[in-house]
Amino acid sequence: MNLILLGPPGSGKGTQSSRLAKEFKLAHISTGEILREAVRSKSYLGEKANHYIHTGQLVPDEVMIEIVQERLKALDCKEGFLLDGFPRTIHQAEMLEAFTRIHLVVALKVEEEECVQRLASRKTCPGCGLTYNPVNHPPKKENVCDQCGAVLILRGDDKPETVRERLKVYVKLTAPLIEYYQRTGRLEFVDGTLAPDKILQNLKNMLQSKILLWK
Ligand code: AMP
Image (cartoon, rainbow, N blue to C red; front, side, top):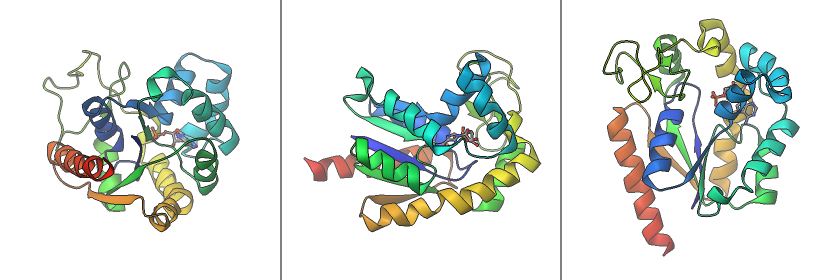
């Protein structure tokens, strides 16, 4: 099963993707995480991507397409994968169609204003990338990651001015993907405003019903 999870920044797609990928034993491919790792390790890709990430812009399509095409060749993708943060433009989606088959696209629905508020208070683990929110998903110990014990930080691109830019970019370049996938009958919506556990349950139910239909 090859899936895409779509949603604006702050919709919770990172959190839900990693939980869902574990549940269904899918390779979780977060392009944002791949880029942040490249920035941390100061690789050539990281140097190129840093400026785009910190100004809320998209890394050029050609760079992203090559990264994903390579990543999908890995053994762990053979039994299925979940793309989180890719595609982000129609061109990326068209190129993806050319080198793999996507069975289902799930769009998390959250209003823009709620995304802005969530990102303003979001804290991220610099170690494992997990994200937390004081309102609906606080860490067990204040400011400490439940999973790896690292001290949580405010992600550089979660600053209010960058968040606004990321949302603008989402509306202009990424939101048209909803219609793109709707046209091919592969799109499902899930309410992203509920509690994280409830969203995960709804995602699981929806996927399980799809799997039964495909069998
Ligand atoms: P994310 O963690 O998915 O919110 O991604 C963080 C940042 O990485 C984005 O704001 C972009 O600058 C960059 N990025 C991640 N995925 C892509 C993509 N598919 N295309 C272009 N830029 C991307």
